[in-house]
Amino acid sequence: MRKLILVAAVGLLSVACGAGIGNGSNPTPSPSSPGQRFDFTATDTDHAITMRSGQTLEVVLHAPTGVNSWTHPVSSDPSKLAPIVDPAASAARGVTLSAFQARKAGEVDLTATASPMCSPGMACPMHIALYSLKVTITP
Image 1 (cartoon, rainbow, N blue to C red):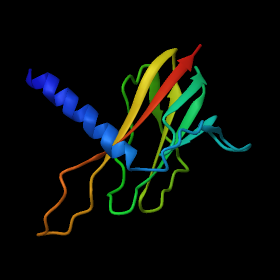
Image 2 (image 1 turned 90 degrees about the vertical axis):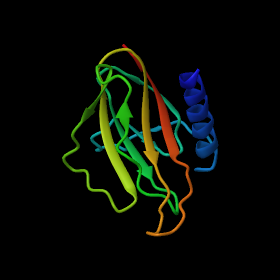
Image 3 (image 1 turned 120 degrees about the horizontal axis):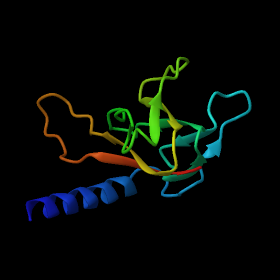
């Protein structure tokens, strides 16, 4: 019963926090510009992408005002969508960069979190922002 309540609370929290971040649209992640090292680039306003095995994905997350930087996005199944090193990555403060390569067909969730900025000694809101990107990989 405790697990069910915890799962429900996390689900409600992710929906509530995600609704307050970004403009609420669900744009399609764009193919990267010619000459770029990645096949696709997803940002904090993207929530789903479809790509083929072997393609690469760059994730660029901008921290909203009053929130710490996003944690590094994590793949729910690294055997399908594996993190890769981007040797040219150099992010500005408040920007989180990560890169992934699709290894085999399936569905994977990429997730990252961000917590509120709180001054020392001050009351801090007890919420967390959740970014989630559903990645569908085709053969």
